[in-house]
Image (cartoon, rainbow, N blue to C red; front, top):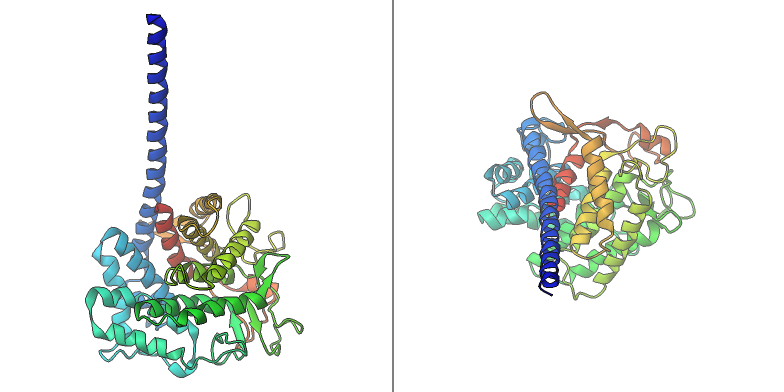
Length: 403
């Protein structure tokens, strides 16, 4: 009897010890993932500062300009500062603002009459900058940028044109450039009626660009169907460009930060986000965990695994699962993607910095010289290291995998 009781207690102690060991190992594994994410965010941010001591020059232009790329890096630096408390990241972002914003809030090089949504993205990091410094010039600059939307040209259904010179056109890129800033302004300055307009931007572009058979959205849509790149029946461009989907996915998950949970039709954005998550997963390269420049043409000649889209998708999926917008199973897709980024796109330099490789430098539609939006066009655009359109989302993805 006593022997049986002893064996019973011994078995219980053994099982408790096993459970404890597994919990410790699990915690260590989670902490290890956390440490890798934060470590890589810091390493990339420090490398970016070393590569581009002048924050305005991150897009390889020594003089820089007020544009979405500078704002993307500044926003990622502000988020890293918020996590680490390291003042150098805050100062780096602030230096970008101070190079362009005057005491009256005017922005050097900014032309309201261009009605260019790309110029609004840099307005996002001005909110925390103003909150921390209480310098009125940042608030005034926010107001100047927001005022652009009052007269931004629109499609017949109310969708913002990407730029004045891109008449009747909505691009997926434009949703990221304008919608999160618009939603943040509406929340911070208590203009809740604008949430409806923010939601409509997504609903309109999704209605016209989503292809249910492929599970992805076309890069652009021309309501007039006059552009050479536009399908004469639908007005859509012909390809599913990776970074366009990346901008779109980040726009959704970031705009939702500011729209109240009980706001009517907010759930429609979550439905679209789930649609995007499914499409991203469908076209993930199963071997590397990454995504191609032209998403649905992975076996086609000259297509390549592209870093900015991959970073954007990883960020979106991690954030969306953390906030329970999408099923938790998508986290495994994101983790595989993050691992693929580290293995395939991170290069160690001789000076101790790191670089993000395989970033498409730029792509668009129309313009001069004319960009026809064909498969051949997208794969022939320049590819470079440390492009801000990849570096910013990489830092953001690192901070998300830490959570």
